[in-house]
Amino acid sequence: MIDRGASAHARWRLLSAVVPTALEDEIASVLGQGSLGVEVVPSGAGRSAVRVYLGTADDAAAWTARAERILLAHGIPLPGADLGVSPVPDGRWGEKWQAALAPIPLGARFVVVRGGAPPPGGREPIRLVPGMAFGTGEHETTRLCAAALERLVRPGSRWLDVGTGSGILAIVAARCGAGRVLALDIDPEAVHVAGEAVAANGAEERVEVRVGSLEDREEERFDGIVANVAASFFLERASRLGMALDPGGVLAASGVLEDDLDEIAEALRCHRLVEEHRSSEPPWACLIARLRS
Image (cartoon, rainbow, N blue to C red; front, side, top):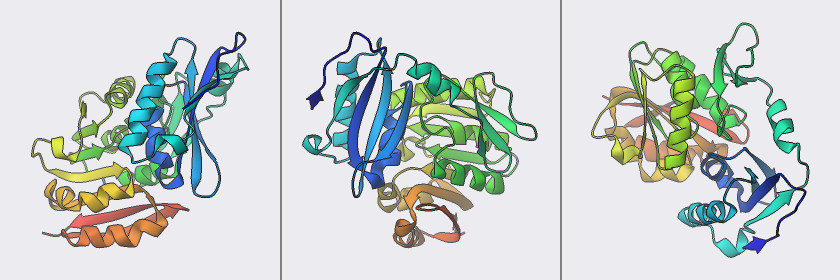
């Protein structure tokens, strides 16, 4: 781990880690929760730097320890991750970051806006809350999932959002007419942020947010599942995904690269989840599969 010291003139700090590009989405989603903001930038062939912005009140040691746990849980060796915290000299970075959060169109119907900012005409606002550092609609996989939910959610249907992150997709499902949405995430901090987002968007009556993953759904079955996670999740849990759906239920699987779709589709097919549709914003993709009766 690199310790770059502190600066008397810095109001902000930057925690940075280099990760495989295939995992940048998932790492940024988990690691960025509760921060001031997060960005992902290229860092050589097949590598990306995840940069998490912190305030001076944040405990850098605690954030670093949390980052180490997240990296190790994803099989990323610490020596090659170049993990460290450094000062950000520009004392107005936070204000600039907030001002740069322009409205983000999401699907055909929604727009993500910050705080109480007025939404552009013709779209329904989904409002950001402090700490929603990632999964705010700017990433291709979030947009692909939102567009899929607009097509797939039926009035009164029951949906499961696996790896909910900021909670935006659970909110989209509720706004599209789902009667119940269970939003799960393995990171307690993500669950806290998602709960705040659900409350800020008036979706508490339809959306339940709690710590857990697919195995923690308490045997409940759903009409639909949205999962914006890593490709390995679908390969390892294809059977459990099928078990969590009612016959005819539908899965929207994203967080994956176009190159991984064939392998994922085959794994799902082996458990009666038959591909119906693919969409992409290269290099990212979303696969729709339905459980055969």
